[in-house]
Length: 251
Image (cartoon, rainbow, N blue to C red; front, side, top):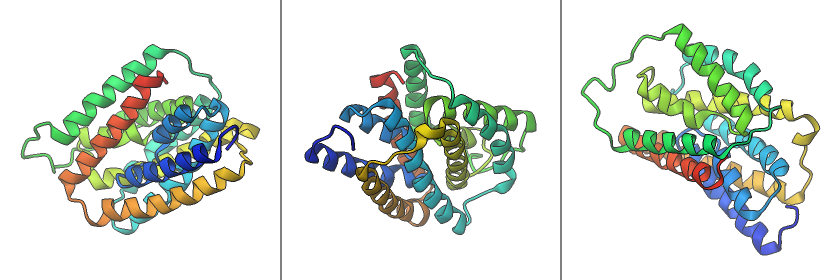
């Protein structure tokens, strides 16, 4: 990694692996965590944004494969979300985002969402699915795609709680949908970055390897071992990490 000592590089790589374990366990890629770690290590925004998207692709791809094989995926919901989000993720990736207020508002929203998901009261109809509203599906997909490209994240940190709030899917199915959603939007974001997406530092290869190993471990917990409540509370923890990143850095 550029301008980092051996010790700093080791700490950065270890943090990437830990982020991958936690985020992949709920079907996420971890971009918000990677961006937070990169900011703390002083990496340039250009390298951090592209690196986070590449790591997102690796971790989210593994998460989708594991969740889908276990039956936690719904293509009927995924495809309209993806169709609306991918073009806007590409457009959003070409816009430079400024403004601390934006980050503070998003951070506060994620804090609230984490509490409601993990510890808020749920009525007995929680497991009942609601019918899809196609205008809402397309609106959600487009808005999250734009946000994903604009901020350099895959969008799953917002999509998963929305799917659960709207009762369109059970929690683990929401994780599988979000994993593929993150993957396609991260690829669109990389395409939008063009040559800036290319990272040649040797340390980045190690980061990808550790992220892949972390994703394998994390999805083992999320897919096979956690019940619905544990899954939601793990998701709440991920949302709070993302919120902390937004509140501390403002972006």
